[in-house]
Length: 92
Image (cartoon, rainbow, N blue to C red; front, side):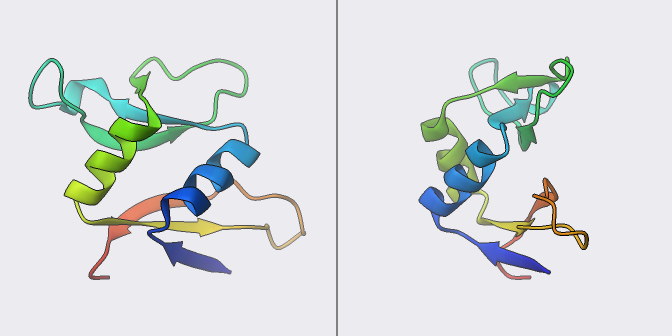
């Protein structure tokens, strides 16, 4: 069952517990120093070359600016730790 949160600490804990890091799609940034579309990078077996790791501070600044919420699943149907997550509008 998926749940939604905007709590920064809960989001950071969920991502870090699964070995993820805050990231952005570099090619979507409006400026060279800007933050593009947010993603979570789970670097199992290597990093995704289209993603760039960013600080938690930059991640949450963009998260709040874009009025996003974090939709995530704690466990799979089989009871394993899930890595399912996505960003949705807070109005959803």
